[in-house]
Amino acid sequence: MNKKKSILESNLLYTLIAIVAGFIIGAVFLMIAGISPAVAYGKLIDSVFGKPKYLAWVLTYASPLIFTGLSVAFSFRTGVFNIGAEGQFVVGSLVACVLGITLKLPAVIHIPLCLLAAAAAGALWSYLVGLLKVKRGIHEVLSFIMFNWIAFYLSNYVVNIPAIHKEGGGEATKDVAETARILFPEAVRDVLGCKVANWGIILAVAAAVTIWVIIEKTTLGYKLKAVGFNRNGALYGGINSDASVLTALSISGALAGLGGAVQILGMAGRLSQFAGQEGYGFQGITVALIGSSNPIGCIFAGLFYGAMKYGGSKLSIVKAPSEVVDIIMGCVILFIAIAQIFRILFKKLAAKKEAN
Image (cartoon, rainbow, N blue to C red; front, side, top):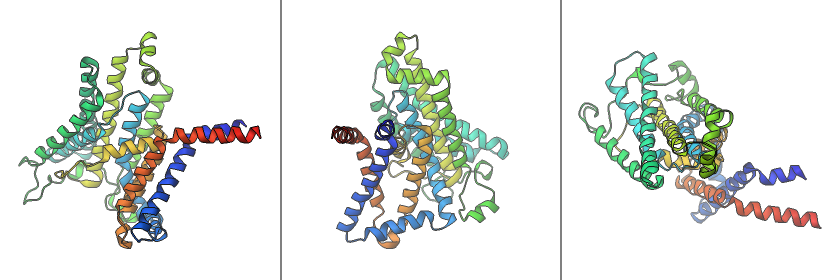
């Protein structure tokens, strides 16, 4: 009885239902397009598990997603909706890129400096929105949307500064210095078959574990969660809710900024001029929802999304549109959002069964 009840209450159950439903709906759209779902999904799975190098690429794709997922999940747990992870990701990648290009330092100093500066940039970007919220009462969602676009245009402006811009044309910056890259040793990359395999996944997992410890095992985490559950109750209990909001947003922004740094110093190696929002911050919302806003859950959710992104990029080989991945992920989020309906339905069915 208790075991059955705990299963019906489990977020994992409804996440799995959402994922299965997403794939079923994706299959329907594939059939409408005249493409065999078995062939398309077979290619998707083969593109992830077919060779060791595919898994290395999945980990590379997943690393920044885990960071932005952690960013959004942390803010969710503390009662703030960080829809600004996109902007924080962009300013983090921008600062890491500029320092990676302009500074000439040994790797042992260059890499930590770029990472810390990116985290600080993301934290500051988020902190400014927090100030607008606690000092002027401006809702963070509105501010974050505006700050996302400010970051977007700021990045495009900096990319075109002559000292930063790529020589000989091209809408991108120069390559960051090798001393700023977080790539695995060349011999390891050769064995893995992935030329941009990097330490980002190790950093992401370490960040997830650290955030879990902060949330679940520290006084700071208790205070932040208390404000998230009931701001007035926390204030009555002697917790400074404004300070907690600013702290939560700063940590959340730092995580997204680190994600931007990992993307630039690991996979990309340079910053390109944006034609549209890059999307890592918004994809982080998906990762956080799939991971039930649990830091450890974000690791697995990020790996799942990374696998879908990399595997989806190979669907054109079987003439299937890569957009089917977006359809699947969108449906997953929709079903997670309405999970409460399934909870109520399953509980009623279970109660009816027991009554009979």
